Amino acid sequence: PELPSTKWMIGPAEIAAMKPGGILINAARGTVVDIDALTGGITSGKLWGAAIDVFPVEPGSNNEEFQSPLRGLDNVILTPHVGGSTMEAQANIGGEVAEKLVKYSDNGTSVSSVNFPEVALPAHPGKHRLLHIHHNVPGVLSAINQVFADNRINIASQYLQTNEKVGYVVTDVDAAYSDIALEKLAEVPGTIRSRVLF
Image (tube, rainbow, N blue to C red; front, side, top):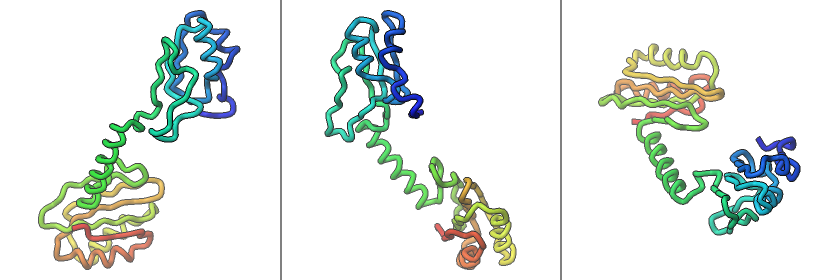
C-alpha cells in the first residue's frame, strides 16, 4: 500500500546496497521507488535494468505524454499499471457493462455487480418475475413469503442474496397474481424498491 512508511522506500542508499548487475522490479506503488535514484543506478552501471509498472506521476489521459527519466534507457521495461486503461480494455469494459445492464433490466440478473447482491435465475415461461430490494435486516424474507402465503400465491422460483447493507430477492409467481403481490411487497418493512419485471 502507499503509506508514509513506504514512500521512497527504495532510494539512493538502497540502490547502492544492491548487488552489481541487479534488476529492480516495481509493481507495487509509484512512490515506493525513487525514480531518479533508480535512473542513476542504471546509467552508472550499478544495476543492469528495471521493470516498472507504476510511477509517481502518471498521465491523466491518453492525450498527455508520459514523462520519465527511465524512458529510452537500455534494459528498462515500462508498462501501464492498470491494464484496464488501454483503449482495447476500455472498449471491452464498455460493452461488458452495457451487456450486464441489459441482463439486469431484462431478467433481474445482477451477476458481477460490485456493490449489489449477485443473483441469476433462469426465466420461467408463463410466470411473472418480481424484484424486491430491501435493507439487509432479519425477517424481510419471512415477511415477503408471508405476503405470498396470505394471498395464496404460489412461488415458482425464488432466490435471495445479500451483502452487508442490501438484500435482493427475485421471485417468479403465477402471472395472475403479480399486481396483488407487488402492492403488498411494497409494504414490507425494510423495502427499498419492488417491481414487476415481466
